[in-house]
Length: 372
Image (cartoon, helix red, strand yellow):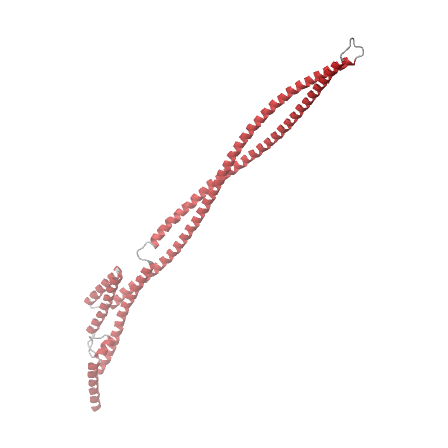
């Protein structure tokens, strides 16, 4: 009919306009720079576009591997290339396989990143706890060492004081023996001298008695010399007085000597007993201190063994957590860059597929228009 002819004419003109003016926009919008909008047989065109996307994804992964110096990404790019070639040779679509390879690597890197974060948390915890244990053991060692030094110094001081006491006791014993000896000499002299004085005094008294009795007689047989007798008696009385005084003085001196000796002896005994007690207690205290020093030294040796274990573990954990060329921050940045690159490769693949799908729909629409 006339209207049908006019419709076909309008569609032909629209097709020509679209072909001449919309081709560039079509390429940019759908990525179908090798697809004719009105091409009926589209199998080879879709395959070529998908291969282009897969090639871009592979090239992107290879560039990322080179940039990050990642052997794993380089191997992934090689595997992707091998899968694409094998699938093309077999006439299969490699998109799903390539996508799975990338997704598997993403999951692996995410797992590694999680493991690295877990390792960092472990390292932070262990390093902090080990440092705290080291501080505690160092403080404990210092306290024990200080205690040992104080007890050792006190023990040495007590032993010096005990030695001084022994020396003082020896000197005191020597002086006491000398004093006893002197007292014995003095007593012997006093006993002898007193006996001599008393004997002399008795003789003087006897002589005075004889003379006094003689000169007192009234029936003397001759005329006595009263004056001479009186002088002799007077002289003897003076001698008697001197002897009596001498005996008294000797007895007084002896009493004073005995009193002094007894007092000094008592003081020496008290001092000896006191010093002996001091020796006893100081010796006991020094012995207890020496035992405490031995026990504390043993305790310190135990703490030192614990400290050695802490230091050994600290060395190992530092080698595990610190002594690495690449820090956690660097590894994290590398992981993020690799993950970002892999996700970008997936986006390239998925975007190309979406565009291809949109292009096929548009192409079918245009084919239907052409048929009309």
